[in-house]
Image (cartoon, rainbow, N blue to C red; front, side, top):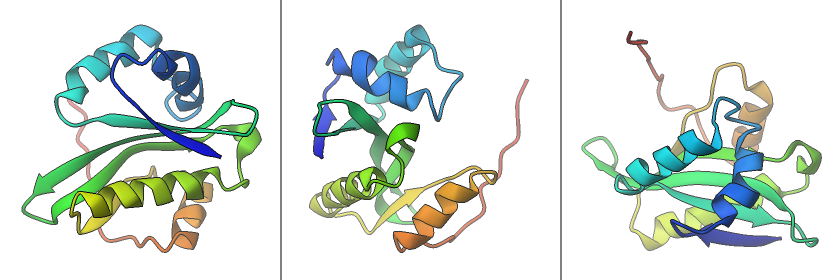
Length: 143
């Protein structure tokens, strides 16, 4: 497994990472993804890709360092997905371990993420990774 932090403008963001990310975020189009990258990079959004030994992208993580009054400094995972064909092969574990190293290097007190209530398989994975449910997330649709 090779884990690569992709920089803004790297063509692999679209050619490699986006097809995997679409398994989690099917509403994205290339145009929308590029627009999000442009705006959210300034808010700290970064992407990391996991590649198998054949050079195929099999995992994607979107993340950022967040500073707030609740946790002071944490690494927040916006997106974490393993390609369906590569699930249960350690990809998610490797991506989380890589992100944890980023968090430690940045002086973070926690690595956090949100997961849709319907994603029970993902929840089992997070529990195996020693993550805990520490809050509820509330949303009010607008418009």
